[in-house]
Length: 306
Image 1: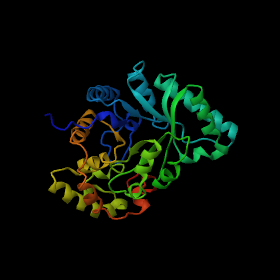
Image 2 (image 1 turned 90 degrees about the horizontal axis):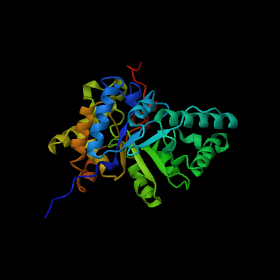
Image 3 (image 1 turned 180 degrees about the horizontal axis):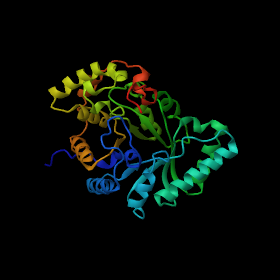
Image 4 (image 1 turned 135 degrees about the vertical axis):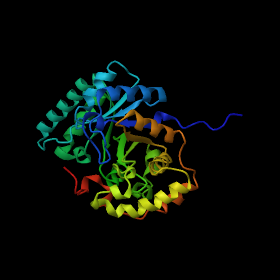
């Protein structure tokens, strides 16, 4: 009898912000060179990873992806429209049209697989003009699936019941239990929503030693220390603990990828599978409720921010 099968890599998504710009407080190399992206894509394909996450706002990310995947329909690409749309309805539609056109040209694809609003307020601003245009594009066959990238767990909980939203990209990590406490993942599954979790490593602190934390993030040092102790007792790295915990939710995980070596490390951890069911409440109990100012990178006031 064969043993348990390793987890499928199909739920792993490559975050590509680093391919278009320097991104993330734990980023050590700046923007990933195109030659390295080519190596990453080959490694990912061989591992069964076939989804890329990008956005108009990610510098040259779409252009890099398009130059390396043009004509290859095996890659599923998720992108997001321009986050900065004007308030005027007519101008908003024009800006949405321009964003979609630029994405198609950059990605070298006539039909976009999955398009997300980059900000949840774009769903209703301007009497919903941008969203209505996306719905029409979907009806015309120019877009397959539509969704929203949210900034906070509260927004995710609010939108999970929206009948027109097929996909949600949400922030979630071991340090941020708000979606877990709201039974969000169970509700999303019941509604048939496709969920993409980002910020699995809380935008970088999961990779930093306690001494490397910016003074603003110093309150994270205590819970990180407790988690480090648990991870050592179970022969895990801290990053491995964060990833294997997120795997327990059974959703797509968007992991930023700045180098092939980083992808190899994430794949090695991924193949170990999720934490055991009895370990989940154990590690969750180690994390105190933390303020949103620490859990939302958009609110961070880092002393070393350029």
